[in-house]
Image 1 (cartoon, rainbow, N blue to C red):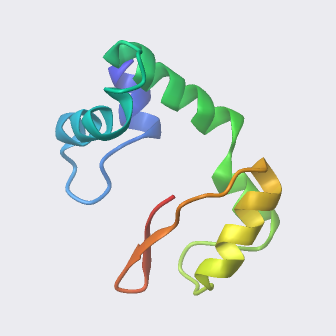
Image 2 (image 1 turned 180 degrees about the horizontal axis):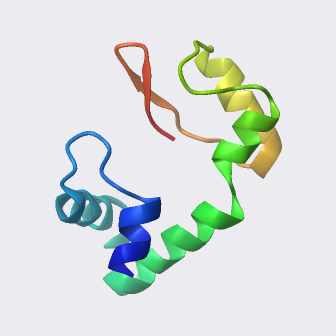
Length: 96
């Protein structure tokens, strides 16, 4: 599980993966009624099932260019039929 998480869900801001996964567990998983490893496995499963990178690329939204938050939200919503939360900081996409 750890190697899959390191490959597919790394801490991009500071490289402290364990702290990042613990934060995600505490914020989102601890109330899920799942064990921590089961929550992390589910997160990875959803990552592969709802390939946001491919959805964005299919609509010509690529890293290194600027897009409105509304455009990104609409493209993702149309791709997965769920409203994403988009978090930006200093004109950078930080979290979906």
